Image (tube, rainbow, N blue to C red; front, side, top):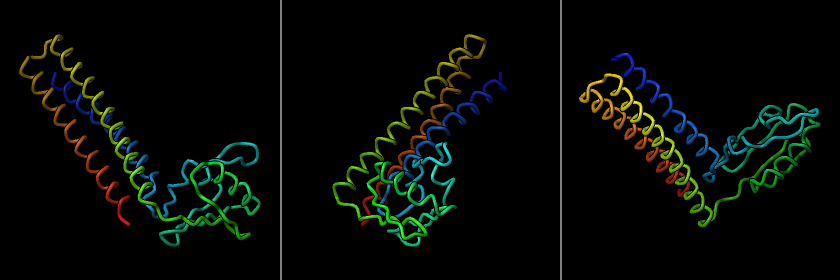
Amino acid sequence: MEEEIEFLLESLKEDMDKPLSHLDKALLKLRAGRANPAMLEGVSLEYYGSMVKLTQVANINTPDARTLFIQPFEKTMIQGIEKAILHSNLGFNPQNNGEMVIINIPPLTEDRRRDLVRLAKAEGEDAKVGIRAIRKSGMDEAKRMEKDGLSEDMRKGLEDDVQKMVDQAIATIDAKVAAKEEDIMKV
Protein backbone atom coordinates (compact mmCIF):
# COMPACT_ATOMS: atom_id res chain seq x y z
CA MET A 1 0.00 0.00 0.00
CA GLU A 2 2.93 2.36 0.76
CA GLU A 3 4.27 1.85 -2.76
CA GLU A 4 0.85 2.69 -4.18
CA ILE A 5 0.76 5.93 -2.16
CA GLU A 6 4.27 6.89 -3.30
CA PHE A 7 3.34 6.12 -6.92
CA LEU A 8 0.18 8.25 -6.63
CA LEU A 9 2.10 11.20 -5.17
CA GLU A 10 4.80 10.96 -7.87
CA SER A 11 2.14 10.74 -10.57
CA LEU A 12 0.32 13.80 -9.20
CA LYS A 13 3.60 15.73 -9.00
CA GLU A 14 4.30 14.98 -12.68
CA ASP A 15 0.75 15.97 -13.61
CA MET A 16 1.12 19.28 -11.73
CA ASP A 17 4.30 20.08 -13.65
CA LYS A 18 2.29 20.21 -16.90
CA PRO A 19 0.11 23.25 -16.05
CA LEU A 20 3.18 24.97 -14.58
CA SER A 21 5.26 24.47 -17.74
CA HIS A 22 2.28 25.55 -19.87
CA LEU A 23 2.04 28.71 -17.77
CA ASP A 24 5.75 29.39 -18.29
CA LYS A 25 5.31 29.15 -22.07
CA ALA A 26 2.19 31.33 -22.04
CA LEU A 27 3.87 34.01 -19.93
CA LEU A 28 6.93 33.99 -22.18
CA LYS A 29 4.74 34.89 -25.15
CA LEU A 30 3.32 37.94 -23.36
CA ARG A 31 5.63 40.75 -24.28
CA ALA A 32 6.84 42.96 -21.49
CA GLY A 33 8.07 45.79 -23.69
CA ARG A 34 11.46 44.18 -24.27
CA ALA A 35 12.39 42.24 -27.38
CA ASN A 36 12.43 38.49 -26.84
CA PRO A 37 12.85 35.77 -29.51
CA ALA A 38 10.01 33.83 -27.84
CA MET A 39 7.61 36.52 -29.13
CA LEU A 40 7.90 34.94 -32.57
CA GLU A 41 7.50 31.36 -31.36
CA GLY A 42 4.02 30.95 -32.87
CA VAL A 43 4.98 32.26 -36.32
CA SER A 44 4.93 29.65 -39.09
CA LEU A 45 5.62 29.99 -42.79
CA GLU A 46 5.66 27.89 -45.93
CA TYR A 47 9.04 26.41 -46.75
CA TYR A 48 9.30 24.20 -49.85
CA GLY A 49 5.63 23.24 -49.66
CA SER A 50 5.29 22.55 -45.92
CA MET A 51 4.55 24.75 -42.93
CA VAL A 52 7.50 25.19 -40.56
CA LYS A 53 8.19 27.33 -37.52
CA LEU A 54 10.19 30.51 -38.07
CA THR A 55 12.95 29.24 -35.76
CA GLN A 56 13.57 26.35 -38.17
CA VAL A 57 14.46 28.62 -41.09
CA ALA A 58 16.16 31.56 -39.34
CA ASN A 59 18.19 32.72 -36.36
CA ILE A 60 16.48 35.27 -34.12
CA ASN A 61 18.66 37.68 -32.14
CA THR A 62 18.00 40.62 -29.84
CA PRO A 63 20.79 43.20 -30.20
CA ASP A 64 19.00 45.54 -27.78
CA ALA A 65 15.80 45.74 -25.72
CA ARG A 66 13.70 47.15 -28.59
CA THR A 67 14.90 45.25 -31.69
CA LEU A 68 14.67 41.73 -33.11
CA PHE A 69 16.97 40.62 -35.93
CA ILE A 70 15.80 37.63 -37.96
CA GLN A 71 18.62 36.18 -40.05
CA PRO A 72 17.23 33.60 -42.52
CA PHE A 73 19.37 30.60 -43.43
CA GLU A 74 18.50 31.32 -47.08
CA LYS A 75 18.20 34.89 -48.38
CA THR A 76 15.27 33.86 -50.59
CA MET A 77 13.18 33.41 -47.41
CA ILE A 78 13.21 37.11 -46.44
CA GLN A 79 9.90 38.02 -48.13
CA GLY A 80 8.21 34.88 -46.79
CA ILE A 81 9.37 35.69 -43.26
CA GLU A 82 8.08 39.27 -43.58
CA LYS A 83 4.66 38.06 -44.77
CA ALA A 84 4.44 35.42 -42.01
CA ILE A 85 5.16 38.02 -39.33
CA LEU A 86 2.60 40.44 -40.78
CA HIS A 87 -0.06 37.72 -40.97
CA SER A 88 0.62 36.47 -37.44
CA ASN A 89 -1.34 39.40 -35.89
CA LEU A 90 1.43 40.19 -33.42
CA GLY A 91 1.25 43.88 -34.30
CA PHE A 92 4.81 44.04 -35.61
CA ASN A 93 5.90 45.90 -38.72
CA PRO A 94 8.92 44.01 -40.12
CA GLN A 95 11.47 45.72 -42.36
CA ASN A 96 14.10 44.04 -44.46
CA ASN A 97 17.50 45.34 -45.44
CA GLY A 98 18.23 42.63 -48.00
CA GLU A 99 20.21 40.58 -45.49
CA MET A 100 17.76 40.13 -42.60
CA VAL A 101 14.36 41.09 -41.28
CA ILE A 102 14.37 43.75 -38.55
CA ILE A 103 11.52 44.31 -36.12
CA ASN A 104 11.47 47.42 -33.96
CA ILE A 105 9.32 46.83 -30.89
CA PRO A 106 7.31 49.94 -29.99
CA PRO A 107 7.02 50.84 -26.29
CA LEU A 108 3.83 49.65 -24.64
CA THR A 109 1.06 52.09 -23.75
CA GLU A 110 -0.42 52.07 -20.24
CA ASP A 111 -3.68 50.52 -21.52
CA ARG A 112 -1.81 47.78 -23.36
CA ARG A 113 0.22 47.04 -20.23
CA ARG A 114 -3.00 46.62 -18.23
CA ASP A 115 -4.41 44.32 -20.93
CA LEU A 116 -1.25 42.20 -20.80
CA VAL A 117 -1.47 41.99 -17.00
CA ARG A 118 -5.09 40.80 -17.36
CA LEU A 119 -3.95 38.16 -19.85
CA ALA A 120 -1.18 37.03 -17.48
CA LYS A 121 -3.67 36.71 -14.62
CA ALA A 122 -6.06 34.75 -16.87
CA GLU A 123 -3.23 32.35 -17.78
CA GLY A 124 -2.47 31.96 -14.08
CA GLU A 125 -6.11 31.20 -13.34
CA ASP A 126 -6.17 28.58 -16.12
CA ALA A 127 -3.13 26.92 -14.56
CA LYS A 128 -4.84 26.94 -11.15
CA VAL A 129 -7.92 25.28 -12.67
CA GLY A 130 -5.64 22.54 -14.05
CA ILE A 131 -4.02 22.07 -10.62
CA ARG A 132 -7.43 21.86 -8.92
CA ALA A 133 -8.55 19.19 -11.40
CA ILE A 134 -5.43 17.20 -10.52
CA ARG A 135 -6.23 17.64 -6.81
CA LYS A 136 -9.74 16.27 -7.40
CA SER A 137 -8.39 13.19 -9.16
CA GLY A 138 -5.87 12.69 -6.32
CA MET A 139 -8.57 12.95 -3.67
CA ASP A 140 -10.81 10.55 -5.62
CA GLU A 141 -7.92 8.11 -5.88
CA ALA A 142 -7.32 8.34 -2.11
CA LYS A 143 -10.99 7.47 -1.48
CA ARG A 144 -10.75 4.56 -3.90
CA MET A 145 -7.63 3.32 -2.09
CA GLU A 146 -9.52 3.49 1.22
CA LYS A 147 -12.18 1.20 -0.24
CA ASP A 148 -9.37 -1.16 -1.27
CA GLY A 149 -8.08 -1.44 2.30
CA LEU A 150 -6.23 1.80 3.10
CA SER A 151 -6.87 2.95 6.69
CA GLU A 152 -8.81 6.15 7.27
CA ASP A 153 -5.80 7.80 8.96
CA MET A 154 -3.56 6.96 6.00
CA ARG A 155 -6.19 8.32 3.60
CA LYS A 156 -6.37 11.58 5.54
CA GLY A 157 -2.57 11.78 5.56
CA LEU A 158 -2.52 11.17 1.81
CA GLU A 159 -5.15 13.86 1.26
CA ASP A 160 -3.06 16.26 3.37
CA ASP A 161 0.00 15.48 1.24
CA VAL A 162 -2.00 16.10 -1.94
CA GLN A 163 -3.30 19.40 -0.55
CA LYS A 164 0.24 20.49 0.39
CA MET A 165 1.38 19.78 -3.19
CA VAL A 166 -1.57 21.78 -4.53
CA ASP A 167 -0.87 24.70 -2.18
CA GLN A 168 2.78 24.72 -3.24
CA ALA A 169 1.87 24.65 -6.96
CA ILE A 170 -0.65 27.49 -6.54
CA ALA A 171 1.92 29.56 -4.63
CA THR A 172 4.36 28.98 -7.51
CA ILE A 173 1.71 30.10 -10.03
CA ASP A 174 0.95 33.23 -8.01
CA ALA A 175 4.66 34.07 -7.79
CA LYS A 176 5.18 33.62 -11.54
CA VAL A 177 2.15 35.77 -12.41
CA ALA A 178 3.21 38.48 -9.93
CA ALA A 179 6.74 38.52 -11.38
CA LYS A 180 5.35 38.81 -14.93
CA GLU A 181 2.96 41.58 -13.83
CA GLU A 182 5.86 43.52 -12.31
CA ASP A 183 7.89 42.97 -15.49
CA ILE A 184 5.04 44.21 -17.71
CA MET A 185 4.27 47.28 -15.63
CA LYS A 186 7.92 48.35 -15.41
CA VAL A 187 8.46 51.23 -17.84
